[in-house]
Image (tube, one colour):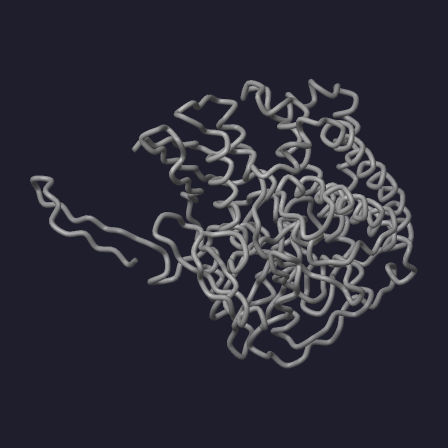
Length: 487
């Protein structure tokens, strides 16, 4: 049996590889998405005061810094039994939506669009953000970078730093806004809406108007039929900062909903011996293996999943695009994973609109940004919708608020099973009779890029007995004496 490796995988955050096994006829027998790096955040958070955790977990990743910060901050509210004031909640949400804009923009332009704008069969040296700028022109590239920078400015103004924010406090937010700052954010928010409209126009002109690309968007080679999980508000619309976590099956029927610590009843994590990334599944369905279709216990999170579990978007322009999205695919749920790119662009517009709404809210300049703390409860769960999907931070503390245990379930972990399915399906479609070249392998890589992988924060667990470890003992003659493993 012949083995092909895509190593390293390109245009993602972190390090991973794809192993493809061919049968005697040169066709794909099996394919695996493997994560080969390892970090230990859940372990070294133990012993920290809970109020220090948001600032610490923001360093898990330079890209996902704001989302880990926000989820840990919400968990700290629970540990101190406090709800943030209305002003604090709106400041947090404004910060979070600005973070979304800068994150979604970089993922679309640097990681997703090069496959379409430059072309999936273009030389690898051109399929990147530089190749994209060469294709669309320096002026347009400069305009995108300039407008995206306004989201970073809002992030820095509210969070205290452009990279790793510091403003979180249990029950509140340490940075209030004055009127001059509010007006500045309002002006920047208009620029972010322009950036979002431009992004959707590029996607429409390049992808939706190209029959060849639409075959990739709507075809079976990139179709993965699984369950979906996302957060909705009281009206059933997509919610990012707060709401109810909802799960639908492959036909769109709701099969579960929960909040906070309820996640324990619905999500189980399985350790596999060939990857450092755990594979979550729906606990009440039970582990069914890496399979899609009806009855699967695997589920996806992220922009496409949020669209599939919701009834619409809460902002007007994004909701128009939401309706157009499902009209194009002809129904719901949408299982075509290239739809992730489009859904991400729609969310970009939604978050820009939400920034403007919050900047125009009179309460945003209030000075009551901190609620009194309650007694330490000893446990807190923070759940948000990160740009990549549902993010869960769960902490236990002692009676002084010192962390005694931590569990972090990130979006790429939720998506581990569907990503593996997507890679396997694309490999089986594009690799035939042993014919493999660079363009074909890039079509396989295109199967994971819609999920916006962040392996830096997804491989964080170190729990005795749960991380697969194999130790081989040799004598002085290099003869294998014993193999020890915990899986």
